[in-house]
Amino acid sequence: EVQLVESGGGLVQPGGSLKLSCAASGFTFSGSAMHWVRQASGKGLEWVGRIRSKANSYATAYDASVKGRFTISRDDSKNTAYLQMNSLKTEDTAVYYCTRQRGDSSSPPFDYWGQGTLVTVSS
Amino acid sequence: QSVLTQPPSVSGAPGQRVTISCTGNNSNIGTGYDVHWYQLLPGTAPKLLIYGNNNRPSGVPDRFSGSKSGTSASLAITGLQAEDEADYYCQSYDSSLSSWVFGGGTKLTVL
Image 1 (tube, rainbow over the protein chains, first blue to last red):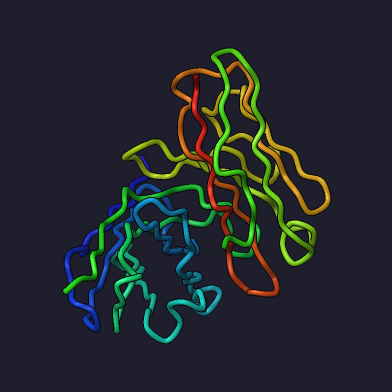
Image 2 (spheres, chains in turn red, orange; image 1 turned 135 degrees about the vertical axis):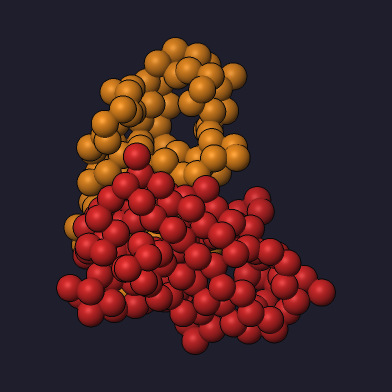
């Protein structure tokens, strides 16, 4: 059974940092591109960023709204992806989902999703 | 403002057919990138509903179908059921933004 389990969410003050984890099982994690997608309350899905597999040099890409503040990494030995969030803003408040992309290129869909973890940025 | 445009809401009676449109441009759908559709039920993780414009993952009823033409795509749901009440999102890739993009989402209400 495929599972993606996010953890690490919580309440953080503006300007603070938080690191989310996404533990994967049930598929070949090391060969998969992993993405983070968020959804603010009452809003739509928003792509955050991606990390490719080792075969593609662990290349990362980010949405303009988080570039320079967020960093995605992975540990294939632990089947875990991470989202390091720095300089957090109130507008980063959202449920953060990790998701696997079926193939490691532009077009394939996001076929497996976690349940999400809530990040609240507030003073 | 989402790169892909969807109607905020659609509705239909049980048994009826509804369609949800997804309009992009020549940097995303019109360039040939695939369109995928996701279903979000309240309190649950997004679920892949249609991939590669018109393909259904295993387990998705054939009441759900997708199509794509030019810079737009559509999701059709026939034989509406109460359990179909959810939010639906289209998704593609945008080459000018170099990012994955979603539609703004459409809330389906089954009357």
